[in-house]
Image (cartoon, rainbow, N blue to C red; front, top):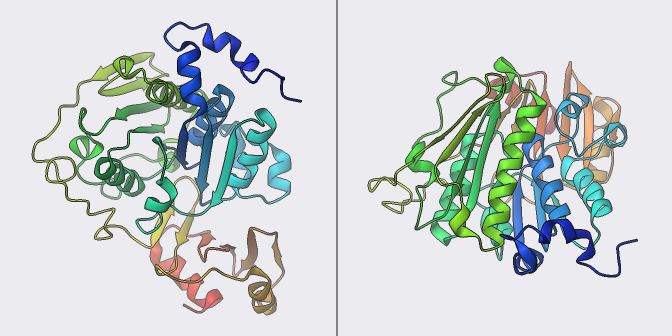
Length: 344
């Protein structure tokens, strides 16, 4: 049972003078969009819900696997046994932690088509993703709409965090005009990822989020914070605004307006590829699809997804029409399986 005094649970937090009761009240009326609820996102979500934000919308396209539990602290083995999507499992745990916060889970990819509706009315966007295409999409929306957001990423024992306040700070495209080319940077497949690094980076993101939501803009850690937990190094690098920046300088929003982006995404650390249907495709009736797929093998599933083992590949189909094909590492191989199972 939640306490009769809704602020009793935040007593220790409000005693921190820079936040106080006024900051807590602002948190309680805030609305946050969290894109991705894996390693970083699960820590961010738990921290913000326990801190008392008003509403948290959790969007994640993926389902849980046992290898997630090493670093995705919001989940447990029961979630995997139930075959739950991350967003749904996260919402269950978050509501149990703080029933006074409105938690809305969405099992979906974040795209140029749906981001404006997902982010409508939100005070802050948070990056729990694992790819730069989605981050540059978030950056486009944030700059166009004047909504702050917090970028974060971690590989191995190293991480980066950068709060972005449109109009007063550099944007992500000032730092990174283009996504890294394939093979240009390490990934969690090649370098792995350590749980303590995830927790530190996500906590830094959550801290910047709390500052922004509580109206403590003067305390924002502007620039790029870079940490290496294995080596014990911590740096903050200035990131100046670029007047020629495609996004915040020239106000060209290529990712948001659909001129950039792909329908196939290699999932970090998974040996899997996500294939998305064309924009505007209707949702999938999972019951009908289950019957259609039955001749191909045993189809497992629940209200959120279907799963089929086909020709050595695990194919997971979601109600929004996306499919994740495991056992492949490039788009061509994934599309071959997609076409054979789903007919193109």
